[in-house]
Length: 67
Image 1: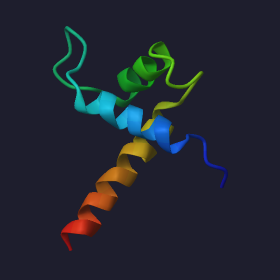
Image 2 (image 1 turned 120 degrees about the vertical axis):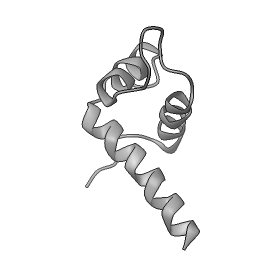
Image 3 (image 1 turned 180 degrees about the horizontal axis):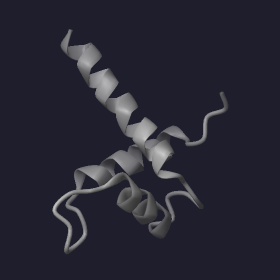
């Protein structure tokens, strides 16, 4: 499977997710985060599913380190 995002783009998506959500929102949603990374011009376009997979990879890495 071809990689859709570079490592730098993934890191910037994760950093955005770790920041506070926009005003009026209590938490980030995948769709909101996908829209925000396009707005910030991190990527030209991205699906919320790609964002989900990116965040899931980081969670999986964290869990592997704890073992």
